[in-house]
Length: 405
View: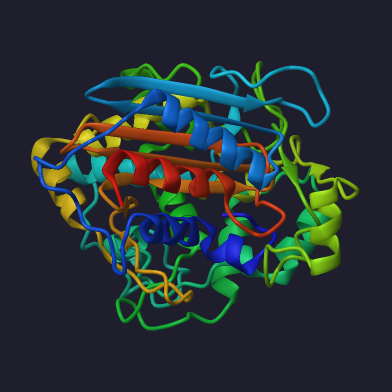
């Protein structure tokens, strides 16, 4: 959910998902393998693929973690700071962008499990100010079928991010921007990736729990799962815990509202090394809120996505329903095959998880509960100069190698 582009703000994560599905398909959408499907995880081949793509994409640094029944393969690439000397490590903290959505959605589903909210509840019950709120359900917020406009595609937000990068945003401000725009369609009639949905869910969770979302995450998710390196920062906190990787982005938010790809002359300069990306490490992430402000490490992300896809955060019945909730969704990038999206969770080929992008950071996490395969990748450049999501592009190649084309 990179605010700097319509692609990134509205659907960076989903386009990354689409690219992954395309990479796992041979002329059509990739489906889950049968339990007897062959899994190959050659450590040398995976690392070579990782290194080659990280170099091709021009990222200063990257990390990967792959787990299969054959064991764990990890690798790091490059440095934490452009032209620096500190090598990337598996302990580095990064901004995880829209992977945060899976956490917000999980809290809502836990509240459903406890009988404190229902998927069929109308949003107006909790937020009378929401347009069509007497028709939009909690489930439609989770599945991106509410029709509510996406606040991160607005010129107002993108301009503010360029001109006031340290501004601390209140989630009510973010929601207000989304609600001020006309709804894209009647509730349930279509699908559109909108960060407004998830920020609303975060506010509803706070309303029900009567405490800040950071405390809710800590009590319900981070502490029970032992995610000691994962956090949800306060709105006025733009720092990253040590150790961390710097993040880098080309151009500006407003200049890239239509496309993440640099113009041909700038692309040539970037490839030649005469145009450098800017350091976005300490940009305040509060504009992403419950939809994307989280911080984590590669091992914590692996643990989280395994719990997410494997049933470590919900009861068996609701977990089964959650995985079954994923449905094909439209992506405006033909001929890429459609990804699938459900209750705050995506299905990417055989993997359940999500992707995330904030200026300077791209990450992918996925888990296959059938074959017990985990793939997590992050990069400290986002997007690449040619517009590709680097971590998702690398994960595509790794997935193809593991499952076969």
